[in-house]
Image (cartoon, rainbow, N blue to C red; front, side, top):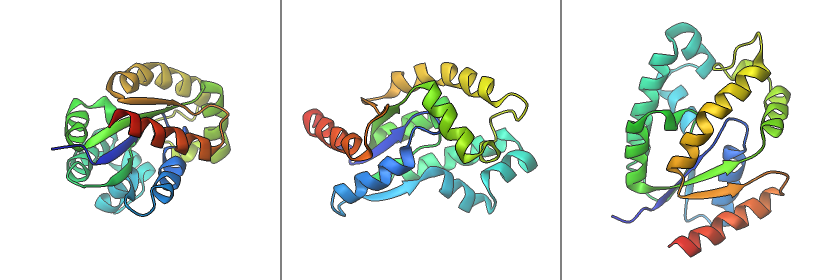
Length: 176
């Protein structure tokens, strides 16, 4: 079965949701956008920070597996994957069945600035004591995983969002 969906992967704060929404618009309604974190929140009936604080990260990761299984059956979707979704091989295997993995990359400095601007309280995997160090450590841990599963890598550093979307569309055409 040919892959009909696009999974946007990358570290928190790289712009997966923003780029995914714009990509769907640019593709002209042929695709739908979905954010895995929102599906997890709907399934749990609570926010991600609440899931982490009340049930723990293991509970969150189990919900993430269920959501990955569900979205892997969708056709013609642009999926904004949670930053940690590629940590589990089951998630990668499920999504790889139907999705082209596009990695959005930016510098750690850009990520830190965006996350601190948004507020760290919405990012439960970051320790409130030393968030900048936690961001850097997680980035160095996860980035090789992102790169190892990516079908396409997009450098999103200091680029206009529309240029990033155009690059994705161009790379998808070349890779089809």
